[in-house]
Length: 572
Image (cartoon, rainbow, N blue to C red):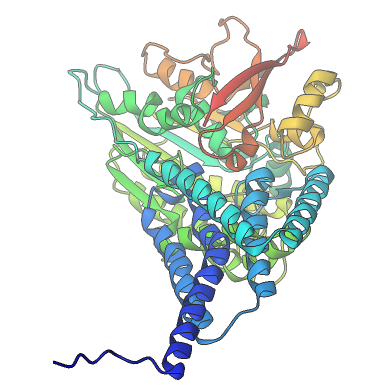
């Protein structure tokens, strides 16, 4: 029996060698490019894990980034099989990928909240450091064989990917605490009206008296008391909301837990337990102005027809792109992308503040005269400056903070008139305030800003997005209030009050025990308390998840001036 062995012609062997060569080459190319493609996934995960509440814990928005990374990697693999890529090009991809991953880890972008006043903070040290890192990576890549470089890049990619997956796995949406109505009822707290808390974001208390005088609308605020010496405890919205919803300052521990207690606890939880109907008129359901146990919620985004998922995806894409780019062109990248994504959607977001008031006025006509807590948060007069003094939306010409302050004040009048027309004005507690002041107003922030101690100055310089004069002005919010059955001409009080006192004021008017650190703004016999001021929260969004974060706490008293700065550490 004759055995026929397969014969390999020279052409067959050559073809097999060519195929093997292309496969090895494609494997080297795709392995070298792995750091680039994995950065499209890991960086968005890092951003998402640190700001999950901003994105309403919607992990779905991470899928497009994962798809881009996988599809791009597959396309490169196929391309490198079909056509040979030079070793120089492979090394270039590896160098860029390693630079992106290491640069983002070592020089994380310091970025305030993504709104009309957001700003990227860049230091010369970081710029020089990133340039040195780029130089070192290029030199190492040039003098290192491609196989060794590829292995180092692969190990770095694995380490960063594992870290990102751990971060993602640690993220979970908090569950709403079960709110069980107690035996108490609205009649037991002896309150015959409603509670209205209207927050005008970024309204400076330094501008209120001048504005109502210029608009000649002083008579519209009958029964109100304006507190001219009012202070915020924080300089940013996300830090300020927990302070007045809970009435307590941050004492240490996990800062996110402190913020989450504002969403599920605080005085709103106690009102709910005592039978109050909770209604919210808020920009969105993501931030700490939300309250999961509210019976009625209206959002600006819904009124503007904005899909929250698309909005969150655009935001994550914007921040990721800025994080990916080198420091010298970060601001340019942000401006270009904001022109595409943020400006159009934020224009709708901002213009929805007036429709939000319109919806409140419509609902107020049918609202019960007692047993309701109504919270409304308006992005007015906060930037961007899109509304003129009569609240008309401008298309091309930017307005000013002064214009939007006038617009916001006129909207206050509309709100008060709606409450009065519904016969809900006289017996209700009405609190109108802001979450912080504004850093660019021309008004003098007051005597507390005259002699800032050097340790406070250093704390601001090190921990804040804003400079010292800006911080001093942002610490001056609007606080304006009317007690039930109070009437007569608007009064101006010289009493020093702070946003921590909002909770205590509500407890006091309802004759409930005070579980906050503040006192009622109407209590003249309460012992004097210094203002608690926290520095550093405005840079919270730039701190990666799981990292230590340092707050600096100080105090101010009209009688003794500034108190010492103390360290209050937090783990995000």
